[in-house]
Image (cartoon, rainbow, N blue to C red; front, side, top):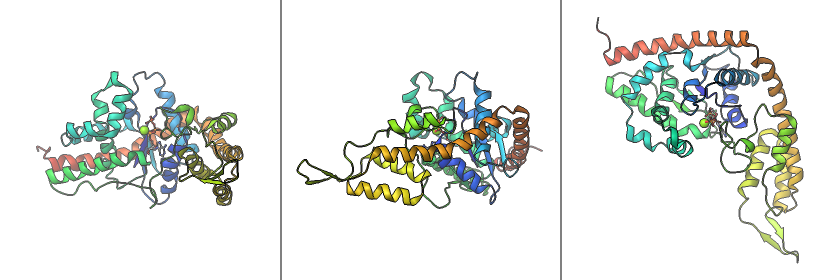
Length: 337
Ligand code: ATP
Ligand code: MG
């Protein structure tokens, strides 16, 4: 089970942290993937664009290879059972703990004028999304790791308080590898839908935009660890600067291993030309993003098709959701006849 907020255009981080794994999981697991429109409301006050954004995120997931016939692919608000479980879990969530969640503190800094209770209880709603399907594997990026820990706590507390083993513990999942974190091009954080937009590569970016963003990315003033003085003496730099490490990380996502090794060798020898490296990176990204962009454009305005996808997805998700809610109500003693 996993979800993405319809807060903007999908980017490389969403792809490598989440959607790529949705696609890899869809043939082996029973999967529930959703567009988290209720979660978007915690930060989005103007909802004029919401419908377009929901349809776009749907289209972009499908363009990345997600198959709505193989998984339950739905919109969060079309599964109202989520709200009931959210209410139950709120009784197990402590305000002090929620206030200490790093993502909450970040959002308070970003939107001090709109610190709403939905923002505070974001991890509770997220736990409800996951536990509603009694999911154990949650394909997400590194930034979500802490939220999973919270979801495990609620699963455990529910089982302990009401007895039984209704909720298994969910874990962040990346096929045994460490969780992905795609850095922003300015090195100042992660790529994001709603922050760092000039330093984020979107799956909807045109070829020229991709090239421009990458050519502007920061590098290093020297040319690797073996930069030399005017006399030719080698000045060894201790550590690869973050901006350069980020470029290598991005290059590894889209370039063949030999190409990466060649640039690494140049870097170690102090002969790397960052302009060449960025050009190679830009072309790799253009080739990677273009087919996804073109496919998403073709799908996102096909409202009758997206409606069928959403209806079919919600129907599948509600079967699992209703079964869980019934068991939760029974465990809690909410059964009077
Ligand atoms: P927002 O800025 O609105 O929070 P976001 O880009 O952080 O958007 P989310 O909808 O919050 O995207 O997250 C969707 C999925 O993408 C989650 O699984 C999250 O871990 C993953 N993800 C987001 N950004 C990155 C990134 N830079 N690297 C790896 N995974 C990421
Ligand atoms: Mg996010």
